[in-house]
Amino acid sequence: MTPGLVRSSDFLDAVATILEKLPEVRTTNGLCMIVELRTAAESGQRPMTMGEAHDFLIHHRGISPAGAQKTLQRLAQLQLVVAAPSPCIDNAKDLLASRRLAAVIPIIAKPYTVYRKSDEGDLARKKFDTAYLDAERLDPADSSLAEWLELWRSLKPSPDELPRSLTPFFKSPLSKRASPSITAVVGLAARLPGDFEMLLCDGPALDDPPFAMAARAILLRRCKSASLARALKADFEQARLLEEPLFHHLRGKIKEHSHDYFRLVLPFSLTGKKADCLLIVAQLTRDRISSVAPPVQP
Image (cartoon, rainbow, N blue to C red):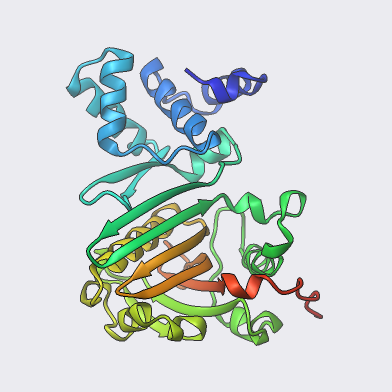
């Protein structure tokens, strides 16, 4: 059931922790489901969709369709899992570990890549765990992006809260560098991702015509590129639901325009409640070839 965790004592430790901290998980079906999610992430598999999770419970746990649905609903009610739009499968939702589950079963997810193919072109989206920006496993090419993530973490009022102001990011010496740079600010006040507002488009984004056109449309649902709109809506909604940064490498070609850049999606809560704003920091892959930038002076 858990090949990734069984290799050490992690599995037994995780089960003991769940039973100690989460007495609400009363069935082995729910326990099996959340351990399966963490094991898949640890091994670098793309997230299960809700449909795949439902089938897993039916075929591997032997419960009824109604029982499978009830188990998934219960896990969502307990804020252990989050259902977010899939960036690669239309009309599907990925089942993701919530911050609460990630704290109970902490793992470092291996990178995985998903693809979106359409008549507009192809777009590959490789997702990294933000742990890859921590000092002990940092690729020198990611050093500058790691500084942006560290700034975000330093401005959190508490471990469970989000930064509440964009001002320190625009005033930071990091923003004076040519790369990485702030490429967008996205408003998340709307209920539907299609109504998220592109409040700012700058830097390398201006050299990416499909993205620049999406920003000029203001609302994501007015984006001229359907492929890009779906990917952006999925990523931005995921950041809003998880309230955690996302780290991607996007590459491909849409409408004959090439994309090849690394991106951090940083969530904020300007109202002090739920995530209501995103700051997008991006670095073109060609700019990563140069030597590592010197540390920023305070």
